[in-house]
Amino acid sequence: MASTTRKWTFLIACCFLSTLALPFAASRHQTPPTAVADDYHTIHSENSEMTFNHLAVDKRNGNVYLGAVNRIYKLSPGLEVQVSHQTGPDEDNRDCYPPRIVQPCSEPLSLTNNVNKMLLMDYRENRLLACGSLYQGICKLLRLDDLFKLGEPFHKKEHYLSGVNESGSVYGVIVSYSGAATDKLFVATAVDGKPEYFPTISSRKLERNSEEDGMFAYVFHDEFVASMIKIPSDTFTVVPDFDIYYVYGFSSGNFVYFLTLQPEMGGASVAGSSAAGREQVYTSKLVRLCKDDRAFNSYVEVPLGCVKGGVEYRLLQAAYLSKAGSILARSLGVGPNDDVLYAVFSKGQKRRPKESSQDSALCVFALREINERIKDRLQSCYKGEGTLDLAWLKVKDIPCSSALLTIDDNFCGLDMNAPLGVSEMVRGVPLFSDPHDKMTSVIAYTYKNHSLAFVGTEGGRLKKPSDGIPLEMEAQLHVPLTYARTYVRTRPSAHTPSEPSAPLEERNCSVCSADRRALLRCCLMWRGFSSPSLPMACLKPAASDWNQPPLLPPPPTTTTTITITAIASVPLFSDGENCLTLH
Image 1 (tube, rainbow, N blue to C red):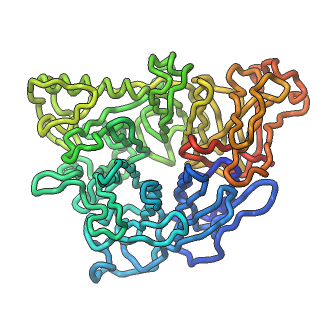
Image 2 (cartoon, rainbow, N blue to C red):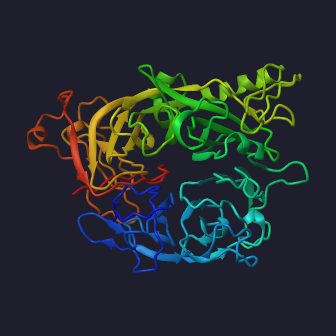
Image 3 (tube, one colour):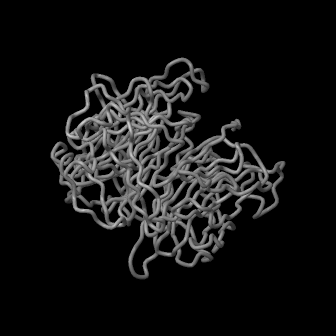
């Protein structure tokens, strides 16, 4: 991978960095990152080529964990570095399988960086799962308190999760159980042409003992069935560079979901691609599995997309799960506590990063509607209608088989009619589109019946819709924003009616933009964990606008531009709402 010489500076006062995936080059350990004492908190990578890859925030106390090239860091809520754990570099060759730490390798070895590919919080066992690119993707289990290594399983093939070097190639979802039951880790990964070594999706045992021999073993495995799905070799005969790229994952109800971008097997190709002179057509799909399905008979995938003004948006860029809130719920015909999925798509279906369209759209899906579509497809297939329609897994069309049974909302499949594909695309509700500055990230939350979403763009802008209405507020960033998610709480000026004052840790911000009447007096308030002395900061537009009465709506063309050094996110909000400190 080509290296790049960008220096990233991260401002994180109450919002935190998320998934900044940048190229890297091999480098020795230098001075650890530090938080700069200024009017805002800043943390630097160790040098211009060693980058942060992933972030996790402890929702119980606000501690921040950074997965970086060759390092894992634990930071305080105020971004002071508390401890670090070295993960690389080391001698390796990605063609060594099993890795050289298991048996000698005949391939030439070189000093290789360890790119963090997955960083997950295991709250039940108070540990961090940190999986890297060295040694075919082995993982460390680190104690949250001090990053002490509790375990590093590497001697079995189940311990090698992914041989792909890119930081965004692996997505994991932990499913926890009460009592003595063993938790599960669902892992989804690109395979980079090595399907014989790595399943594209699997469920693993997450043992309570970090040194347990069965750590990361498949939940079920016998001669014929296993808790995994591999890409068949026949698929690569049809599409030589076939792979499934996992963009997002989450659990909801009885299911685990992954959002993917994958090549179409039978679609038309256009001249211009590197593979056989053709450009591959891609489609975005949601994958659903039952949490307790040991044989993956419940595997179903359904295409997702968005259409606005006759333009199709089919290339998934980012996604985020949130609750609907009362106002958006009425528009979607769901309950206020129902899950909704925000997704960013770019225009078309051709995935060529340097030439892809800048036109993109933010759309929202009711998860209930997606599940209803899946149930309809299951019911029709078990009536013997149609085929399994999963071309990459079943290269030949296999007809559905008829069976007399009741398929309810929690049906988890049988050893027939599985895995299954849905052919018709589920269309999201378009919230807004941008033809010039491609949206690449999204985060959302609800407050006081309102649904708030924030998107980051390729050009380094932060944009905010509310309840499906795009607002006139943008934030210009000093650095390019590639994969970042933002979380901002706002409230009206003190001159408008508001709730009685409350202690800082309990005080909530109202939605300043709920009726567009208080946009110019939005405040960003920090809700502290351990440093309540951090200041409250305001979005301050031009002085002439700042003096306007707060209840007057701003002109339709008004924009509020703020300058911030960088942005980031808190993936979970319930125990810590956070915001930006400006300068």
